[in-house]
Length: 135
Image (cartoon, rainbow, N blue to C red; front, side):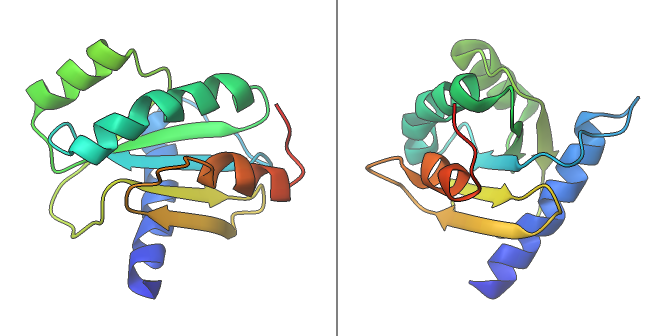
C-alpha cells in the first residue's frame, strides 16, 4: 500500500504540472486526484459521483484526473460521454489499483487515499471535510 501511495503522490504532482502547461498549477489548495480507465467498470460507475464532487468543491479544491493505461479513443469516449470538467493526465506502464482517489492538502501532503470500488462514495467528501473544506 505504501508503494501505491507514493506512486499516486508522484502522479499527483505530474498530473498537476501537465494539466497546467502554460501556467503554474494552483497552490495552497487541496487537490483531488481521480485515477480511472475507460475499460474499468468500477471506475465508470464512480466517475459520475467524482464529477458531482468536482461540482460541489471545485471553487476551493483542484481536481485532476489520471487516465490509466488507456487508448486515446477510450479516453476521448469517456471524456465526451461523461463530460469530465477537470484536466486529465494519461499514464501508461505502471501497476495501479482502480479506481483510486488521492487527496493532497494545500502543503502537498497526502491526507487520504482510497483504492478500489467505494460503494458509499464518501472518500472525497470525507477527506475534504477533515481538511475543513465544505462545498
